Length: 613
Image (cartoon, rainbow, N blue to C red; front, side, top):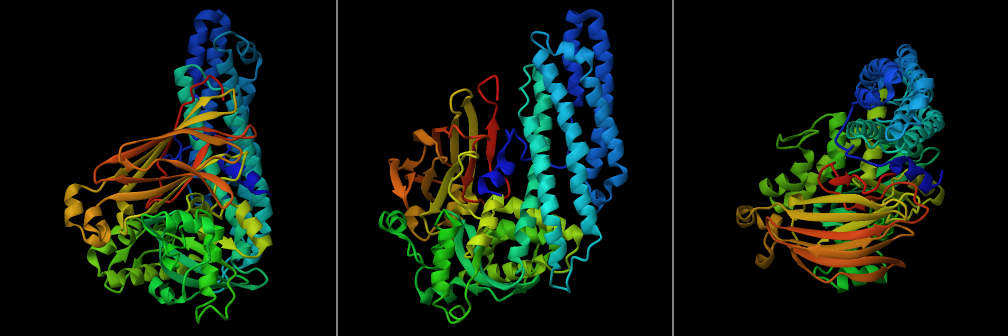
């Protein structure tokens, strides 16, 4: 599978406010009656019959929704044993589709004003019936097969064969599911407000579920290579903190060693960045030196701490390898790749595998780990201990990742890894080109925008105030489609809000607020903007904050925009710009950005200023 095709599964939809809705399934059926009520006055007896049938469609869909909701909110075991329930759901959705495609509905679909909305409802019944009849059974069959397999291999190993056997069927099930979702998304946008609301809700929940299925499928494509199928592999696990932002994540606090071989996993000790400093800087290009060292204001050294400053994981991997090869522990152990993780990823691991207790008794959970590692630790512990604590948490969390594996844990871990990779909280790179091709196709390698069919804007921040201000820097983005007929033009607002208060700036440790008294509590951000592949950025303007003029530049052969902004405590800076995507684009514009200290990416998709998609 090509990278573009894999990413298309992730992004080929319209993303209307679906990111905060989980575990609910398509509550749109009530909107059908609204269409019919508007037809009654114009359609006489036909309208009365249509209304009766609409109530039947509504009842069938509501019955299906209730059963689907119960399934989708359950665990992997519930889904694996869904065989008895699926025929009942399929009966309900088939009945709804048959009624909605009867003669009365087909006639109403040709009526002026409301015909398009009738057609959309017909399409909704078809898409959901297709999902229930085709895609979901394939997915359930894969989970049923896994539930009967022996997945654990001892306490700390994974039996790879069931995963290998399931990867291709899961990939096929995912492809079918994503195709049905695209069919739903491609339906004409309803013009009647309440129907449009019902459609948007259905689209949001359906796309949310599609994201989860896609994340699981992608992980299954990668796990055999990650876990050393056929040979031993060694990865450097780079623990980064977005509390001091770098383009791909944050300052590298510690680095561990992960060794895998035929499913067995060993996590070596995490060494603090101080252990790596004597062994020099990482390899980097002349353009990277120009942007991040020569131009400042913070002059990067490219030592171990700065190796996430590259927007592309591949560059971080090459830099890490060059340092690794000079260390006593690395020079005789060839590095097969890198894995970059942040506190949000560790928090998700802990949520799945259980709490981590620190030597002083502090308990880290699936709710408090990210805040502890990005902020609390700098308030309550000496500076000299913070990197070591990060290493302790990362080591324990990673060790539990593949221990005592069963189908339920595999399901949760697979879904989580895919979601974390999408937000750059977890990325990886392998030096073996064949293996890396699969990792890229699954979306697990962070890259600047490189797909014309699945367009994204790259926005990468690097903190220029030596501090731990990242926890206080909230980012939000609004994406609005403004031209639907001419190459897809979008308007984007990107906001950086420094939420630190003046009191916090005065009273928090300088290790957090910045060790230069002139910059205490300031967000000082070097920002790189990358246009979509085959597209362009125009009219880039900035409001608020102290900003340098935006300049166009070329970084390692790729055009980008570069700027620098200071945002004082309590203030906000907003960047606005227009984006034209490639004529080949088949998915809406999204944003690839430096990860924050939470799962929510802060992106809002506004309704398009057009009548069609």
